[in-house]
Amino acid sequence: MRIINIHEAKTHLSRLVENAANGEIFMIAKAGRPLVKVVPLDAGTQEVRRIGFLKGRISVPDDFDRMDLQELSSFSEPR
Image 1 (cartoon, rainbow, N blue to C red):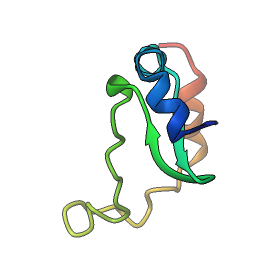
Image 2: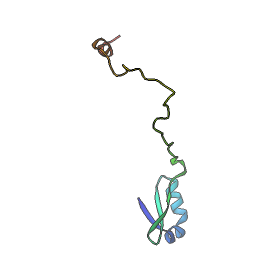
Image 3: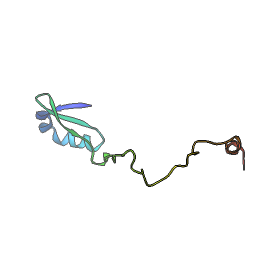
Image 4: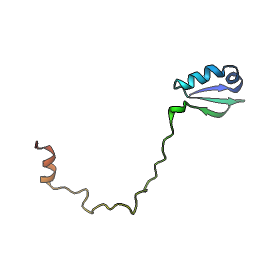
């Protein structure tokens, strides 16, 4: 990821905004220390997925992962 000094960012703001709008992601740094990450607006944010969020809402049968030969072969036979 490209890191741009804050002085350069001020000088070339229009070009950098256009680059970001076209999908480029970069960081702006001050004194060599990254301060912000610039991403296009349509990059979106991923929803945080929580492990176990359905606990208590669904039940899984004890034999969920057990299939006999007849059940398994039914998947490979044409209907």
